[in-house]
Length: 291
Image (cartoon, rainbow, N blue to C red; front, side, top):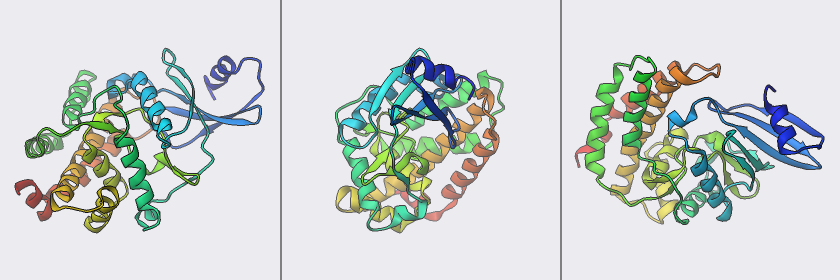
């Protein structure tokens, strides 16, 4: 509870509050705060998160946009100088990975993503190809040894970048882990700290790989999102799954040098390097890359 009680006292002066730490975060600390019969989530930003490409002003604007279009929770307070963000607690249930494939769930998720992607512009820019290079440079600057897997992965990333070319930008979440989805009768998406204008196919691929989708599930995702699943769109998702894992791997590499949280970031990076290597070894991936 270190720091949380002080934060709550400043945010709700003179109020009696019940505070409970919420698990699951590996960048920030999160607390449920009950005050006067209402429940909120207090997010306290982790150390040096700006080095991860997180802009708290952009996060706030993205969260506001998400609430406007019915996808995200209502934001109650924002103290950028402290790295504190307060949102209304979503009294919903988590959606297990296996459920995401179900025909009664996947279209709802696809609609939520499409709703945000089609929303008005938000500040900030997210480019996975640039981010992995930025993470490498920052990690080296903080004394982290870059894994040998980086060079091969970067070479493939540059081929994907050339293959994809310039893409139209739209508001994207860019961190669609399973833990960031809740169902309270509607699909809600939380934790907008990596949001920015980007490639919707990164978001779709990020959702896909984080929910262990195969090719058939990706086709169904595209059908639910676009109304049809073209071969070119399927290829884009399959290629960008590699970039999702590459971003996660290099995020772990950088975090191993800057984070104060007790978490095995090096192991996290190694798992994502292993998965992207398996992705690249798939003949179907090579076919998408060379088409």
